[in-house]
Image (cartoon, rainbow, N blue to C red; front, side, top):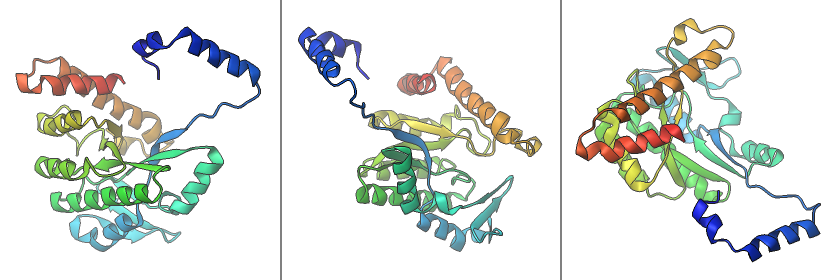
Length: 261
């Protein structure tokens, strides 16, 4: 995207040259690099970790009728379908759709439900898998890192470990952390770290508010997900309008910017 300053700095000659070039080859297709930022992935090693240790950490692991690994935690049951795991079929689908890059992100059940130590292990396994995949296909995949937000000391620890690793382009977070709104001041150290390193946060729903009343007609998606996103955005925006301490001023300003973007 051009900035206003960039446009003013551009010469008229350059603009005329571009127009003339397009006129000479009006039939040439414009190539646009398509980047999909809503691209969920379950690394095989992450699914295997859950299958091995999930039962001992509060989940009920099993397999569905199709033989796919499944997990059940309070309020949520998820099965890990092959198309969300296998990279070969993903690359083929990307090529068919004309998508150049996937910004990979974990999705439900994420890792916030787990005891902190296991949550950290889940996040580390996912993050390392993203880095390894980026290194194997640097032009096709980047990663949005997971942090164990249920324990802020561990979340900051994992941020410091992963923020500078190859292919990590942002942080992935739920629209609430185990029912806690994102304006909770306990989360602010992570936001400050993101600002310092210039890493954006992508929010995604998990167990939206009122989910127990929206089990039919896809209401969980139609109503629950937009509502939960609105609560997350409003919490961040309105908390930024409150009077912060001097040390948190930049953090609040940054979070309000994320919500507006």
